Image (spheres, rainbow, N blue to C red):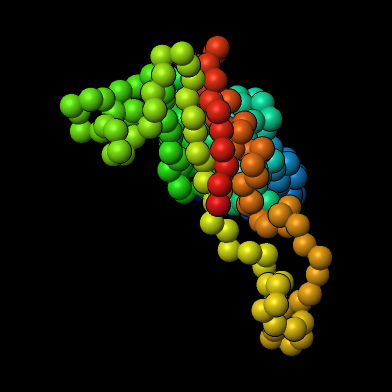
Length: 218
């Protein structure tokens, strides 16, 4: 196999004159093995380094470095998030559509798994119109051309599964098989999406000089 000590010893021997040594060369083999072991380590390091230069193959902290290089501090790794999930999020963010209604909807859906409600007061499809499918007393909302380049967004928090190994309030007493008791906060939820994360995501995809009036709901 390429890059193994045996491979390097074979390559080195192939460069030496055939008549210089006997058929059995333990001293020469020992000398060449020292060089081969060193070069095997260097070859493995080069192979590892090559993997870390591409998003598709980078691992561990190198994946975090790629995210920082391209996205700054906008997309940190979630607590205990595996490389595969983080890699998919980085890839999605690098190719994300921006400056459109679809971009706003998709970024929030990706974060929480729940599509937001978006209302543009200057968009007839949202407000309805007389004689149209949406109108007075029906679905829709009051429109206004006095609010150009603005929209109202209702973003929904992710439906979390609680804090691992901790009992819920008034659910059970702490004890064997019952879960521990502790004072907890949202920061303890692995991979939790905070309200600040939602606000930052909206800001990343909204066009310049526009306003998204945001409400965050459960």
